[in-house]
Amino acid sequence: MAASFLALVGWSTAWFLLLALLVQFVDPVFTVLFVPLLIYSFYRVLAQLLQLPSALRMARILREYPWRAYIEVPYGLSKHPQIAGRQHGWFEFPNPARPEQRLVVNFPSHRQVGWWHRRMASRAKPELKAQIQPVWFAGDPRFVGLVAVGLGENSRPCRMRILRQQMRSEGGHRTLTDWGATREDIERGRRVGVHVDVR
Image (cartoon, rainbow, N blue to C red; front, side, top):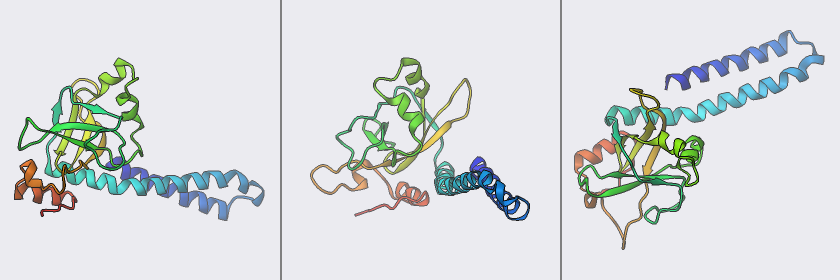
């Protein structure tokens, strides 16, 4: 979160300084040299603005849910039969209410998950696959969560990405109570921004 905010401030400052420099001091002959820098800094400002909502949501998730480390969690990039809609990589975590039941959560988008995909691919080298075991998870697989890895001994979770629940219902409508979700669980999910259908 802090890194995203600092990058946003830094690139915004760079864009304004370049623009001021270009307008006030640069000879028109040299304008061509500054335009690519101006365009790139503007692109970086937009990229940081797009990352800010995701960073805020990660902070909300971490306020509600603690980190837990899981060893040998099933994961994949291939189509999972239980996921509805687009798939960009999935993990299976135990249901907090029924640990014997595993629920599938999915990356909501393919953006910025290249690091994960290189390690989750079936053709990935064993040393790459080893980098995502154990997997850290903060959240509730019935709703939403964060996945991360701890690189190095005693390191904090890093490479965080949001995962969301989008499992198909079998034979019609499924309620969250089928997964053992209580009112407290549902309220906690709402606090992190999940729109929960309680029918």
